[in-house]
Length: 489
Image 1: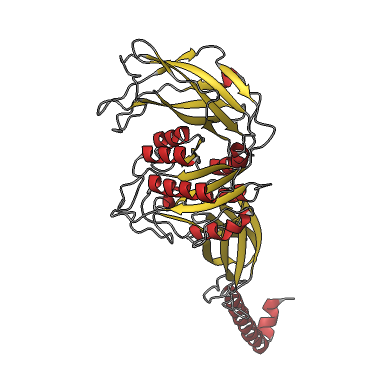
Image 2: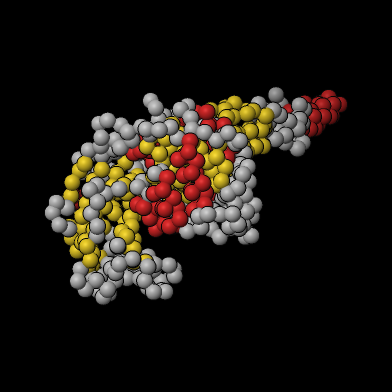
């Protein structure tokens, strides 16, 4: 088309066309502007653009409760809820619970972690604006352990002429993480750790019983008089027993056994009572004018159960509710010697005839200075004399995470004809209590070892002194440390 000619020939039509084109351009520009601004269907729902405030994604709340397999609450567990790529975390309180708010709606996992337990993850579905309860049961870790048992036949230590050498014999049991005595170990698996006094403590670390401040280092010289090593099979015929379990319920337990592993472990022993074997249960604590404060058990310095009618039972599970209640009855100091004497009197009077009578005392500390009015046993010698008089053997279990007096516990066990078992941490308590029935009945394999140690300190190993040491045992899969003491007569 010839636009020049048309414009000249029909100016009215050209002006009309220009007005129409201008209006069309304006309408198109407005449409483009609206599209650029998100107009025409925009909203503030947070999706697909829009000029309003975005709405946050939907969330819910996850309430997690953590217990062990026997129903004991587990405080201090780390809990993480992960849903849709985002996580919320928290730590369980004294009741074993934690509430996590603002967890994204959808399906995900709750992961629970606690030292001395096996980590566990469970699935969870979170609904918007609702609370979902998630119970989690954790399995406790177990590790190998060991202890010192009475030496049979008895072999007194022999001091060298200058008091610088000492030959002694100890007998030990070594347990795997399933509470089974390990057999077939050879002499190279055992070694005595050298000992050097620590400048950080005023108490003796290596040799006690000398003048104030006395201690002496020593090293291993080698094996003692032959035979210096022997493996001893347990008895094929089990000796029936009546054993009273005693538990330290002082305030320090709250910190040193925060998951109540001692109570859980006791159930391992009690549920496996068999035949004519019987068990008793006691807890000890006393008021003390210090930070430990007031004892919470029903009767101080020791409560023997059932309260009002203490007795031995053949059904150990009948004590489970009492053990669960002890988890909240922690307070006061540790009247170890007096409580031990009273429970030995109970065992001597109440245990059936024909059974081996024993007490098994657990503690994380040492005998404390409490109000001793009415006490008959305030010294370690009092408890050992009571054992001899009543015919009740003393088994001791120490937990090293506290201020445990391993010298006193080992001395009580040696003088009381029992065994000293030591838990470096709570994972060894299950191992120890799981083996206790076989240990009481004499069925466990043990090792008898004779060593010579030496020191540069003249007359270090004199009569009346005590050597403290650690026997290391390489089981092939782990190394077990077994503390021991040697009483020099």
